[in-house]
Image (cartoon, rainbow, N blue to C red; front, top):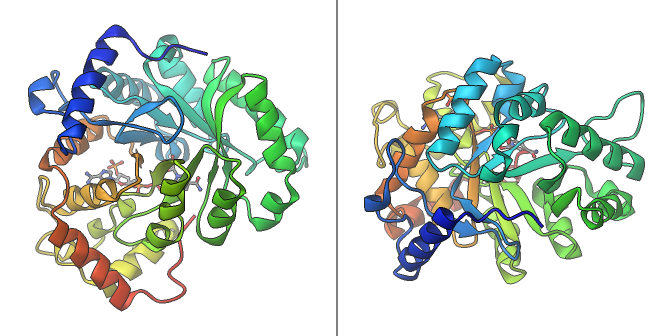
Length: 342
Ligand SMILES: NC(=O)c1ccc[n+]([C@@H]2O[C@H](COP(=O)([O-])OP(=O)(O)OC[C@H]3O[C@@H](n4cnc5c(N)ncnc54)[C@H](OP(=O)(O)O)[C@@H]3O)[C@@H](O)[C@H]2O)c1
């Protein structure tokens, strides 16, 4: 099993653990390196991974076709500043290749998560055992590594989960050392079913001020089972940035919900507020204050974003009254169809 714990990291973990025991969300800023403030790390459920509360999500660089030199800069500077978790998927265009090119030479500096099933070449069923196994092999080549730390099934439905073949293929990949852990990435009833199987080490799921179904549906069970919880879309795609309905269909649902929820921190006069009490700070702090959440992978194409978001977390846990207000408003306004968004 690879040793991800360097001596300096071990020292930091001890100090971070002391901070956690004292009830702080963030490691003391006195520990800060140059650049981003030092981030808290949390143990990802029953895995041996101590992940930074902010991870990197590679969908944006892949789908956005971000140039390799930008990806090099973005990932290397974030890793230099303490980021330790990179999440990607075979289907995020060229993102695996970009990540491999940028940081394969420092593989021990980060945990690497990928996903399978969504895509397969030549008419192969991506959710079949053969499809899952072949996808992992392709990912390892593209990422230029001989193992990943975690493979998530990429949001398959209940039918695939119930069939069991994809899960068994992941178990075999784990036994073969291709991946150290296995998880399910998805939402709503399929996520609930996946958690209940007891087969997965982690759940990756959407959870934010505009996507709260998972807070009641799956998070408590994950806590009971000591599953790692990786939040996707935790900043809610930063929907407050759009004054009018966005043309990007992926964020429209969240934008519509935001309009109806009408949170004070998303209103036009708050949109440009910077710092921990602006919309981005409140969004990230909300998600990371929910008990049982270990990390949120934030997508970006901006090399400065990791340091900026780490700085927002210096605000510490969101005050209980603010969390309660966000939850109360959701419960008043949310419609039955406001389920977790894949
Ligand atoms: N089914 C699945 O398994 C699934 C589905 C969705 C996502 N994911 C994973 O989760 C990751 C994150 O989800 P996501 O990419 O959909 O969205 P997200 O992280 O919720 O939002 C990303 C967007 O937020 C912006 N942003 C980040 N920090 C900001 C800040 N402080 N202020 C203003 N804007 C900010 C980024 O813009 P800039 O580029 O300007 O920073 C980017 O456009 C993905 O990359 C992927 O790894 C998995």
